[in-house]
Length: 408
Image 1 (cartoon, one colour):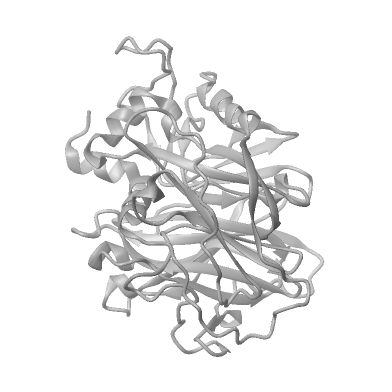
Image 2 (image 1 turned 180 degrees about the vertical axis):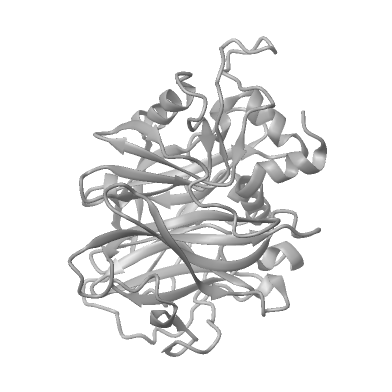
């Protein structure tokens, strides 16, 4: 088993998000509804019911347990997806285990498949699915480290024109750049937001552009990384992000939003940020949810738009956020956000584990029905690496299907 500092580093975004969930609260903040996008179709919505999506969960278990190759995905977190024009589904992950999976039984006499401690761990990966079946892992890491003691975590992605008005399409992937740091930044100091351009259909990384450099913000807890989720609405792509306020001050993180015209994600000058009253290219963004003291979101959340209503999914407040999810609704990406609605607790394996990073997958969803993934990790940081190798099923996405209904 690696020494403790290495073990902490290898657990990556998973445990980092768990820290945010323990310390962050998820309540509402009513801010001005100033961008004028409130439509007559907007109605309060909530999760009417939910059920475990065992088929999707089992497909990732099948693929991760396949011992046919040594450079394949065997587990990861930070789960995001995007549908490609040819029908394939591209899945993007942050910290990822490759290598071989063995058993069961494992050396501990347990009925879990396992991997040994020499299994490679990379900072990001991508897996292709066709017709509901995972087929191949792209060469990993897909996005190289930008510099010494730095790494890239892919977050939300979309297919868009190469440039505004172009007939040629490419894949844009939002990237979070983090830099190694000392306590409390043991999961990396937020550094920059980047956008990678991937060619179609071969998914070659053509370029990586820095769209927002946060290094000039001296206080790391005030730095904002964008891309935890994207919402396409007409000519605009709304890009949500958050700060790491909870890492330094034990307060909740805040949510922010930017917008970019279609085809402009890789152009830094095309980004506009909500400053509390208007969209601007120059001013610092202001939170749309969270006051830095008692309200806010966790480090990762997801937003969708259905029939004019925006819905935000995140882990619930306080200790419930280790296992329960909740939702909010708004008529505009800038808010005000209403909620939280009733919590719901998806299935979790036994042991000292926690859920985090709820992400919606519209590519697998239908009207009134939403597929949501969540990641699972070992709760105790120092023991996480050993436990994830001892039971490979822990560090893989799980899925639920939600039914969204108007609130009563």
